[in-house]
Image 1 (cartoon, helix red, strand yellow):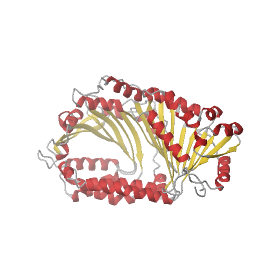
Image 2 (cartoon, helix red, strand yellow):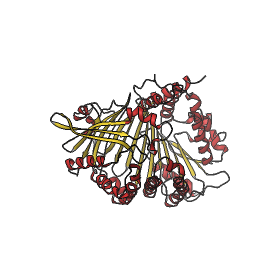
Image 3 (cartoon, helix red, strand yellow):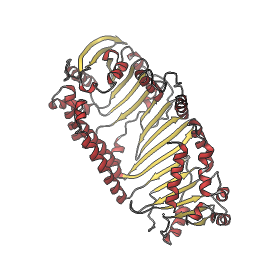
Image 4 (cartoon, helix red, strand yellow):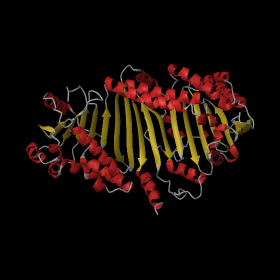
Length: 532
């Protein structure tokens, strides 16, 4: 969807809801703070330029909605706010807009011929601002709303740091309706795992069903425990910044989980090769006890993929639990083939013993050229070589092309591109609390700090940070695809197109993604080059 269509859709939703009545609640279900019309127009212009849109046409929607007379009264350097209250999903919201208009007399004159006036919205003077509010056409607004909104506007602190800041707060009744709405797609997805095509692909439906049960359980718990959700948007230093935050109710399961995730990674910044096509540093504390039944069942259903019995899952579950808590860094590149390097740092498990158990587990996997084995060959060469006095082991795992999971269209071409000859060849070494892993010949690089400046700001609450270059991934995919593909990715400039992301936890969860505007521009130019 184009930027202008998105803006028009938002304007339509806004218009419908503005013209929406019941007693005011303690806080709105939705708030949207705008830093200023100036900031909004500047950011929209930058994004519009990157995607080949006309910014003037996009920004014309707001003055068009207010009308030229009202728009002329707007202080374009000051923040404004939209808030909505809703008692249930069955009732239309009451919406209030706090506009930075100081001349109320001029507003009263201009509003009669404006869109706001025609929709029958009410309004009052709030000092340096005008508060406009309303409900669905034909529905009256309770008289108490004027006093309630006056108090709300007076107490509101309008000082957004980002261009657009959204916040959602849902009460119990709306949460219940949303949980009910999840039930149908969940049931449909679970039923799809019984399809015969799942069996043909060699994927145990029970494993996929268990994975999706855990997935939906996670989101259902978050929805039940949610106090508020936030989304912030702005353009900074050539990036579109998108920030998401989740604040749980104090004392809830989600709050306890976030508080337990206290593994810091800020000091790992120097270990990552940030110029890689993909680099990530992350840490995780112990798995919650409530996850154990799901983990055990998932491992049991996964065993047939590797030609193993359900009883073999015990060792897998044991190793999985022993691998927590941990910290880790991985660097991945997609050039002629997939290459990687990184380490896994155990924080509460004897590393040497764990390392030996991992190698033994890999060696225990069945190998054959029949459809029952995932690998046709596994070779582990202990003490293959040494580096700085440390013994390095070499592992070679050859994928079995006859396995059902290798039969998807073009899958074997993808595997051949990533792992020439179908071989996963890498080296491993245990050093202190860390297990180092890398593509053959790359292990030396990961032993030493990379000392590259991190493109992401890390702090004591950061639990994950990374970069990914989407164009490099697409170039790899294009190399696998037919030579007559419509879009040519091979000559694209990947410089300055890295997505950057981070995740923080404390009493809330905060995720941030930075998308380079250059990436939008590259995609737009690529699309235009394919036009006849």
